[in-house]
Amino acid sequence: MEKARAKILWADDEIDLLTPHQMYLKEKGYEVTGVTNGADAVEEIRNNRYDLVLLDEMMPGQDGLETLTQIKETSPGLPVIMITKNEEESLMEEAIGSKISDYLTKPVNPSQILLVCKKALEQGKISGEQVSKSYINEFNRISQLLMVGPAADEWIDLHFKLSQWEVEFDDHPDLGLNQTLMDQKKECNGEFGKYIEQNYGNWVNLEKDERPNLSLDVIPEFVAPKLKHGNKVVFIVIDCMRLDQWLTIESMLYPYFRVRKDYYFSLLPTATPYSRNAIFSGLFPAELPEYFPEIWQQAEDDDFSMNRHEHKLLNRQLQRLNLNLDSGTKYIKVLDAEEGRSVERNIKSMMNIPLISLVINFVDILAHRRSESEFLQEMVPDEAGYRTIVRAWFEHSWLFQVLKLFSDRDYTVVLTTDHGSIRVQTPAKVKADREASTNLRYKYGRNLNADSKQAIFIPEPEEYKLPRRGVNSTYLLAKEDHYFVYPTEYNKYRNKFYNTFQHGGVSLEEVVLPVVTLEPKGA
Image 1 (cartoon, one colour):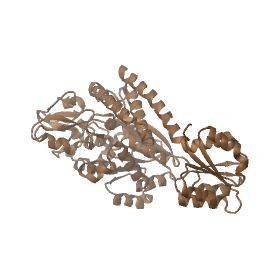
Image 2 (image 1 turned 90 degrees about the horizontal axis):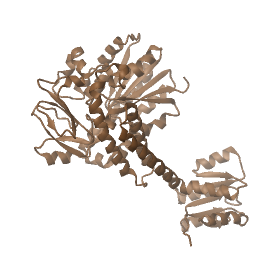
Image 3 (image 1 turned 120 degrees about the vertical axis):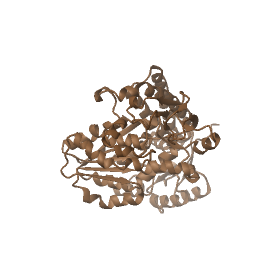
Image 4 (image 1 turned 45 degrees about the horizontal axis):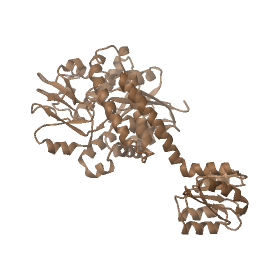
């Protein structure tokens, strides 16, 4: 005898008239128990396990809504489908507010009942099967594309698809395909590292229309045209946000904005002093010392000290773009929640400013703090955990409230990030002088050496439009998920930084980044 797929309780005062419907469900493999009143239904649920309840709304004595309330008190997670003759909207709103899973209006036929039962009981399984089938097709397509070698726009599409699957699999953790996806991402990053090594040096020496968009193109391409057309703009940079993290929060903005996604490639190294300075200045890193020598006076790439001039960089770039904003610009860097709440309190007073720039460090700070905290490592064990935390932060953040406020104003929002991050898992031995920089994903200094399979070596920084940091200084950029560890105390630092989120190197997660334009729906 075929094992029942699920146990269904059907409560209806005319249950005997529904025998054909019950028989049809039993033929489809379900086990069905019928009762004639709400009190018996509640008693059955208290004493037996059921997977679904079909509940008549119009029963004598204890009606469907009262029965529903008692069912939810006894078994809050039990799916309930309300069946009613009453089509009043208020009744349905009350039932939906009481968390019914679905409802049907009498008369119903067996096929309707079967469909709604399958939807309630097997939607996850059916959806998972479809997701598995779709991913296998995508897996094969990506594998074929890697064989012929993707172009720049194909790398963007490939990274978007991989990120979409990561987010999709968050909703289907039992499919068993996560490791397959991770392995494919690793393969893609291996090929992407080769692609960047072959092409990046050419990109930075080509004219703008001969290469993909890079960090220095973000404001000219996505912000300046809006300003030139007389639009007011809020420009937001969320430090260290990956594409997959953006995809987890994007849907929350659909009720308020028309959403358009574009992409660009971060400059190298994918670290704040290089990539974010390039966004605000519109210059390559090698050009910054000429225009702003004070930025490179620090000996170390400190994110805070070397990005203190972003407002100045932005205003100079706007001047070069012939944008003279009569009411000026406003620049705010938000490092903690209290500063964010201050922005939320005061944002209405800025509504006459044509360009408001916000730099938000939450995602980056989370990555750094996670590296130092066993508690955060337990909360954020992997990319899925990171996505969950970022989504929860955004949903309850001052930023979401501010964005909703701008959705009701005549502002366009341009939101992006300066670089992403990657969970590093493969140590790479590096040799260098004592004065070399300490970053885990990139280094500059003298006498740098590492395995060419694990890193990109840049002996002539000028060819990559990078500043030469001292005589005979060179750069190393980690590829894939490698992180640099010195041979001395190798095991100590290999273990200390294993599985942490880092940036500065070459991976799809760090380099291929979204630029999102949010237009208010009323505009």
